[in-house]
Structures are given as structure tokens and as C-alpha cells.
Image 1: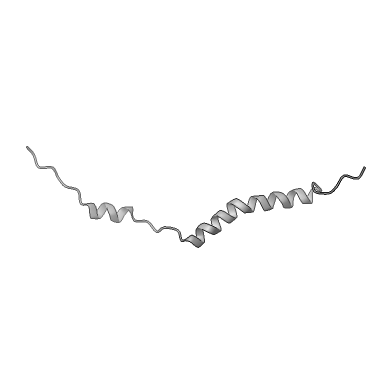
Image 2: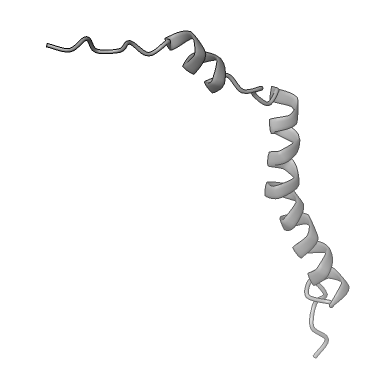
Length: 56
């Protein structure tokens, strides 16, 4: 039987290590892409008079 070559696990672990985003940056991203569009839509609708009561 031929010897099976063993892969070095230390190299694969080092290559898999990535800088994880901090909690603060994650909160900023969630705010910008989650709450930001909602605020933008509200401002747009308010500028078009969507929230004004209709005068009969």
C-alpha cells in the first residue's frame, strides 16, 4: 500500500481565518440597509403629499 500524504491542517486553518466584522459595523450595516430605505420611503411619500388628509 502506498502512503497517504497528510495535509497540513495548520495552513488550511490560517487561510480560513478572516477578519470578522465587529458588532458595531454590523449594526451600522443593518441600520443603513434596514431602516434607511424605510425612512427614505416615508420622506418620499411625505413630499408627494401622501400623508395629507384629502380635502373634499
